[in-house]
Image (cartoon, rainbow, N blue to C red; front, side, top):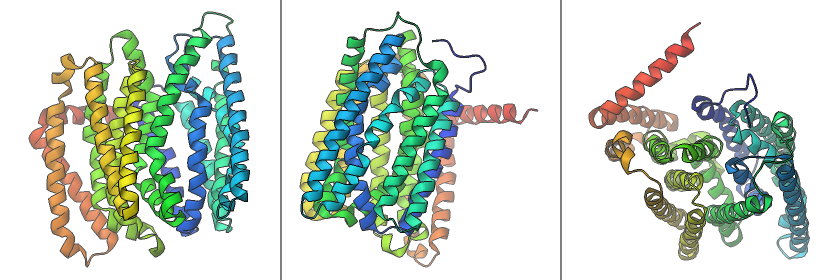
Length: 489
């Protein structure tokens, strides 16, 4: 499908730097909510959302990613995809409503049941926005995607915060999620009107697309369950207050993971898929690995080391139990970023079966972690989740290295030097952070965060200057060139 004349920006720079403003709104909203909600109220709302979002992966049926990778689209294929998703979403919404009514009648789960009934119709509304949004992804219409994402998150933020301030408790989040879904549907539909297929033939066969979607659904559901099973287990076994603290720590620790997920879905996947069709995705994949090592993993390390003073700065006293969880879950998020990168590359390379197998491995690892740690409390669960995430990432990266042609690109990617610089920097910064602890006990929390942040930047420049100097010069030259282009009248 040709790109419309005067289309919005398509490049990497816009994909990388527009979305953080969306993440910033979402992140600020999540930081503000603890000032209006207790951990119990927050956990009460999060638990049904985990169930609804899991079913949403089923309702989408992998047709979002199947749409991106399809060779061509036409009107019959589009109608078949829409109709299939609508029927599936309505069936799942009805099923979820029945489950909610049953839980409402059960002793001790009446609030959970009501929340599920209220959220069930949102499955259909959210699903209607999926294919229009992924039409924009397919054509890499990043500005339009930015408008959709920003409008949806602003709707969520405004409604959820107003509801929380008005004392609506967990219902404030339910209203916020509804506002988010409705705004996303309206904006995605409007922005993708010119991309909706109108030709009557020439596209891929619907049964073939549906089979691809089914495989991708298995991978998506397994990935989601493997990633969020910890929250559901905590909510049911350790209680809603524990889930509230755990989810709050994940909100802060996963802030870059959310950005990485968006970049992987909206930029990396369609770009690597196009590379794979044209010349093979090995070079692009290894450049993405190097970028992850140099620019995605380091902030997670800083976040883990600064967890205690950061939580004391940002959250009320009743939420201070977030700090020890954040120190662990920030590192788990770093491992998940590496896992996500490998899985995205495998999907782009057409290795759906491997993605499904990785999903099963991730689920097995987290299930073992939870079974062994839940009797020992919340901190033990966080440590077990970290261990399972590290193992999952190691398996995914090893499999991607075997399945994707990367040998001829290794020297250009300079992964070894980047990895050595990262390990040296991590060890030095960790040692400094522990050496500062006695003196930092008398500092203001914000000052402690500032010292750790400044030290991390200085040490990072030193590590790269000593161990990755050539690549650092190239990175600085590129940054300078982009700055000069942007400064020209």
